[in-house]
Image (cartoon, rainbow, N blue to C red):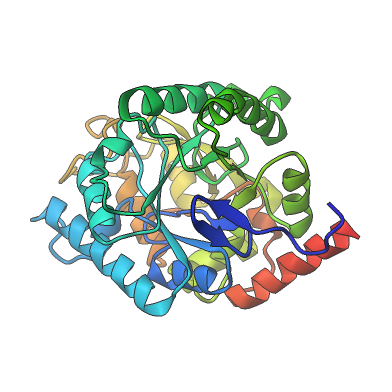
Length: 361
């Protein structure tokens, strides 16, 4: 790949000039502000639907309606701000998964990204009229095969692309704690596995399934490396946090800038999965057995042990998004400590392209 600029990312009839998807970050970290800015620079901007209703005043009284209203509003706002490609990330583990999928489809979103569980029945929500692309997020070749098999057999539908997320990602991880540092689960290996598993489906249906690498990708050199390994594009989240357009508070962004390598840690989340976050007093208190009294007003994540949990993950994340890091914490990728300043999305994309060109030279 001698070209000094990365090739575009094609997902069906959608073509992103920049093969970069901005990863969906909940709660409230990637909304219309960040997603539209990334789409305007030629990447794919993604609104995170997890906990999106927490931005609404009536969430406790009207959980479902608040989430649907908030998602609808953010998609419409992003479309007003950008003519580029926009996606929504909808976690399978959400108790209102189906309602959010229907809402995204009604609003004509370009792409639905779906992980945190296997989205085995996602195509059943398609009505046949829309052009929304369906892109599962997986953490293994096996998961990619299971989804492709189920979708083709039951719905005669091939995934439009697949994101494979490795163990260096921020937030909840689809790995057991002992797998996170194991070289056998390195993203390079996972990408090769997923590519191999999808080959028979591509051959049989005469259709390409672009594979997008995610988790720990931070520089333009990283983008080049994964494109050379056969990925069609990359998904990046952590590096977009420290942009002016990111929808989180300034205090949230500054937590990234202040973080040292040893502050990036794996925590045990109430939802039953390990998560990567920036260590702070809140996390230390939980680890030291200090229970924060909670009343779960809604069971937002199917797998959450909300009865025995020492804290509410959704509340902790929205508190952090709003800048209250005494009552919450910031999820972050392995490379979060590398952030040194807050820049515009335009400047960040420019830096990524420069880094890519240098690596490709």
